[in-house]
Length: 532
Image 1 (cartoon, rainbow, N blue to C red):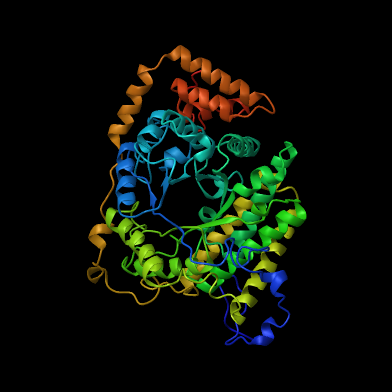
Image 2 (cartoon, rainbow, N blue to C red):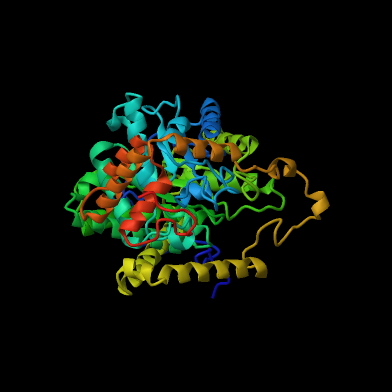
């Protein structure tokens, strides 16, 4: 018997030997880097690098634009922007419930002009524009802004996050029925497949819901549930699997259990490759090889002794580089307090640059491949992920499970489990439940971390004035078109959203009329009256 386990409760031995991998078939289970089943990576062997970026977004779009330009000047090779809570919940900044949160947890975005300001003077044709912003609206806005900049749409690269399943239960609730959330996801993927073919419009984000306390197996099992359901919906529309599958990417988490996390990523690539080839019949090799990106775990960080978080970020990011991810962001050391300060942004970016330039970690692809321990762990994680996927799917249609509250209960139970693990000390966290120091001695970096961000009052007033200056008749016409399109089965919602943006409508207004088309309230909080 063993008393050692990974976070996913996989038993650990003290030492691993050739006996543990005696049944390993190199070609079947591993393959060379760049070859099926892509366990060892999606690129051929040789020196490589990854997109180095730090998650950004604060205040109004002009403030965030300055932040992005500063990071690019410091050597960041891609950008990723997150919206504030109102924006992610599809509320305009002038909504009564939004005022105290505008710009405090990300950038406030609600109309085409905001997107123009956010991306002003950025090299849209030569840098990846990744977004933790409402997907269909961001895809529409990027298409329009690129056209204004005379950047061909086919040159746009980057991603938008698709999260129809779990956003209501473990994220920013948008108060829309599942059918509408799924439709918006599939419509934006179909639009981008046609109009922006290099853009990753199908980014499965397992990060945000895994931060509830999920382990590696649970995280990827739920991710595959969502991926599989969206793929099936796209295929029902008549889309060819190889038309959109090469643009599927997965944004994963990374806890402090670094060997399990490396094995998780290797197992995910292998599972995805086999699933796409054998189950969905993809023939394009690019459809078998998922782009894996990662944001290191904010849940692993502590408000106590924030300097420890720098160490955590460095360890996790080194593990991810050895796992062969295509893009990486490090959670800022002050994440427990605020969106990243300039100091924490720089620490995260410099950490990546040091790994890339000083460690030689990028000279060998999959450097831990063949390890008795890692290969055993990869096999076990793959098996457990797939068993959990099949178990959930055996319970019924995942969409129906979502509507019945299955996943909400799942997340509630996980959060309770995680809290107990911390309280009992089963999950050690230095500074929080062990190796603590008195508050009066815990001062290093606290002054930086505790700097408060005030709500962006000016942006609220700016949006109020913006709305008053518009032609109300024109706004009613385009919102009525959005409503009718949402009522019409088979019509792609991205195109009326583009027209509405061009006319000056906002995300809150467009979302509201689409809710109405599905017999939901225009304003889920009952505080704003519909325009149409």
